[in-house]
Image 1: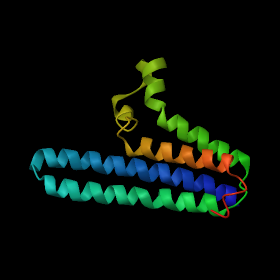
Image 2 (image 1 turned 60 degrees about the vertical axis):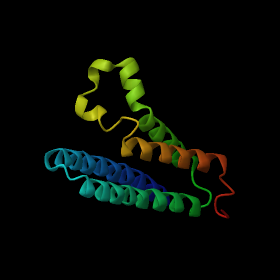
Image 3 (image 1 turned 45 degrees about the horizontal axis):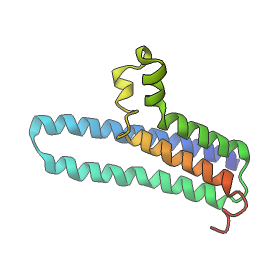
Image 4 (image 1 turned 180 degrees about the vertical axis):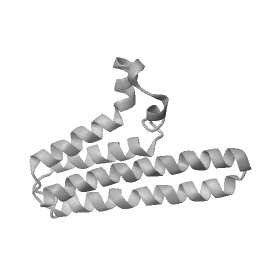
Length: 136
């Protein structure tokens, strides 16, 4: 049950990051039309805090779980690395298959990529420190 909850948290975190990116893209368009940078800056700061919540909760869940199964750790590591390097892989190996709408959310400045890197680190830490995580 804990393993399913971990994978569900992984998926939810990625979806929250994608939603945050969509929100910021909408705010950028709105700012370009209204020239109101104040609302943009306040809301993007709130978006960053919103993304931090599932990342911290996912980290706490994984670290409090103690000895987590290795396959969940490997899934976290692989999914995180794939998201983190998706744009680089796409541009390097399949440039014709990346749509401009998808690449926008896989650029290094994207919150999805940031969440992917954070998830990869959670997976790496849970593989490297399996017995020590409960006491952390």
